[in-house]
Every structure is written in C-alpha cells, then in structure tokens.
Image 1 (cartoon, helix red, strand yellow):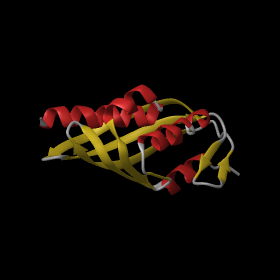
Image 2 (cartoon, rainbow, N blue to C red):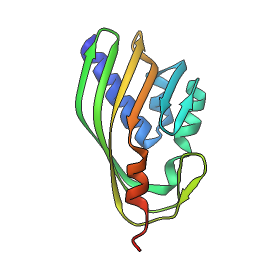
Image 3 (cartoon, rainbow, N blue to C red):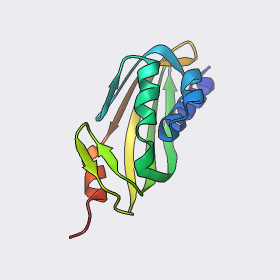
Image 4 (cartoon, rainbow, N blue to C red):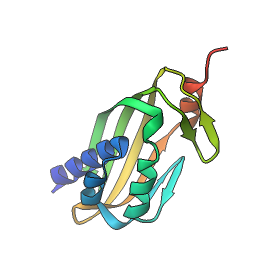
Length: 139
C-alpha cells in the first residue's frame, strides 16, 4: 500500500501545479483540509476552485519531486516547481505582480494524511517571499 500512497501523492502534487480538476477529484477526499502559505480550504470543491484561479500568471510549469516517503497513512514529499512568469500573478490575497518574463523556481515540502487511498489532509510549506523576490522587475 505504501507505493500506492506515494503514487497518489505524486499525482496530487502534479495536479495541484497544473490545476487538473479530474485528477483532484480522484486523489482527494470530499472533505479534504488543505493549507499552504497562501491557501486554506476545507473541501475538495474549494481546492478545485482555488487551484483553478492560479493559472494565467504562469506558463511552462514543471514539478520535480526530489524525495517522497510513506510512513503508515502519511506521506511526505520534497519538490521544486519552476514556471515562466508570463502574466499577472496574485501573491497572497492582495498583491498583484505584473509579468516579469522571468523563470521562477520555488522549493517546498508537502505532508499528506490519507483516508484509504485518498488524501484527507495536506500541508504545503514553501517560502512565498521567494516568489516575490523572483517576480519583481529589475530596477
């Protein structure tokens, strides 16, 4: 079962980066609790809506999963996301960063709890200030 949970978490991370609602529907429970520095949701419906809102500011998005471990019904992953900042990007609730044209890279870690083979709780940790630093225009 451990390998299965690792596969589910890897699919969930890729779906979160791409905003793929079909995969999100299959890997998260309906009552999922998810948190990150700029996201807090208490249902799969909210998660789908929040992830769909991230799409237009970034293009050519890739994720690299550097490490992934499963212990019982919990899984942990370390990852890097890279993307081109090609459109307006909302950072937090109120800071809109205009397109910089730069390639940005963010490293982070995710901790997931499972109910069966679906994720029921997810915590993402990354430095959102790194996003700001990389998207600011030179000058």
